[in-house]
Image 1: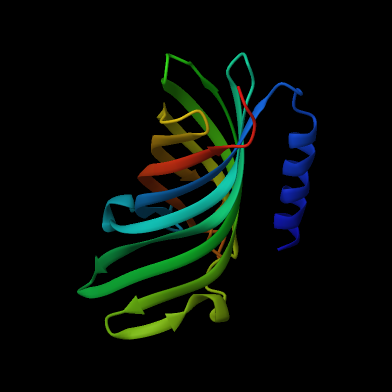
Image 2: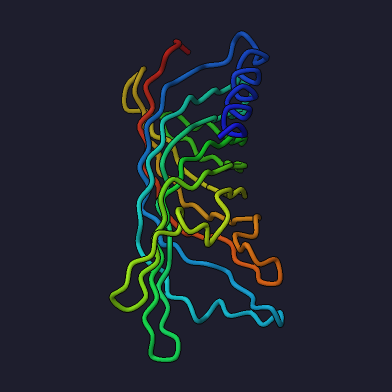
Length: 210
């Protein structure tokens, strides 16, 4: 959790050095995610195709800062659910993980009347709050047994479109690709990381005038 607080301090510092003419807005967003794992065993064999993705959700609040020349800065904090299913040797496996995460997004927006396409790239850091593994009908608490690492970090790429509905209220739609960069396995001879594809719907409430 210490790293999360350090990241939040970094976000606050970044906000304070923005140009004075930047527009600021409060944001709330919800995402529908299709999540899975990238996995390689101790022999280096990729077993990604053995996993089937599952649908999950995430929620985030944040602030969106937009400069007059189109630079975007979007820090946020939220909750993210992820996991995957697998059938191996006639055994049914299922994982469900819940993370608290923070992210810092930077991007560029092109303003066209009230419709604005943009692209955002974000770095994220997550801390595992709750995790479970189901093996057939048996449930295992991942967080208590420490079967995987608690920390996750990676990048999110998100092209999107922002729609101005009024002078102070906008909505936006994004396509997301999340790529975890941290090996979640305790056994370093194996490698596992989160991946997700998703769609995000967001609401933006302007705090400053154009």
